[in-house]
Length: 288
Image 1 (spheres, one colour):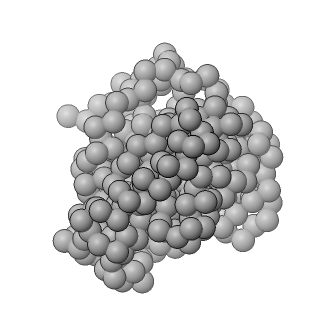
Image 2: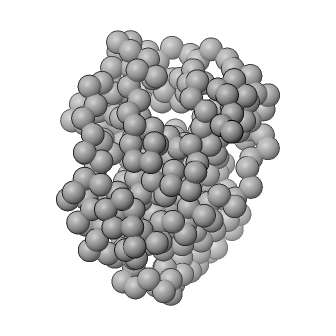
């Protein structure tokens, strides 16, 4: 039996920010397909496109939103009004693309978006936040607001260097200490390359950031079926469910489901923080 919205509102929501030190590592593809895998496992999932100025989650899924976070910020509609239904019943929060103002929001406006989630009445198990790549303010704001940060890396020197830079900023400037690492586009699906890549990042962090804890989540292989799924504007789980990439995403989703739920907020701004500490609901601050 599905819980009523009232009872579900008191249940904690697992919030996972998916980020990367640089573009081109497949971060949004990971966000979309991981969300689809979690939804397929029976979780009630919402995917927030938090790459505010260059949003493309809707493009990857072949969706055509009539309104998005830009209209929420302008006060034209509420967060509830812009929700789209994606594969497996997961909900999508679309952002804008090609609007410079969205890429240049002040940190207080990011906080406003985060707190607006307290208004949502939908029962949820997982919120996946697809951040922008790099070190801009929106990335640090959304990572700080999540309970878990998943850093996507691939086997390129720039990817490892920039992933380290992201971890260093989130640790030294914002106090985040634990990061989950996903190796993407590895050349085989036996996990050896993924673990080797993970060890490279661990070696750098152990040398310079001794208090940081990195956990290996798994690897997604380079898979032509994933590229073909993108061309069809579908998740790889829907388009090619038996492909190596689809199997990898299902395995990672299963491991995420085993992570312990947080017992309390860290003390900063967090999505659904009221559900973590008392199950109540507060009025969010204005978005503008």
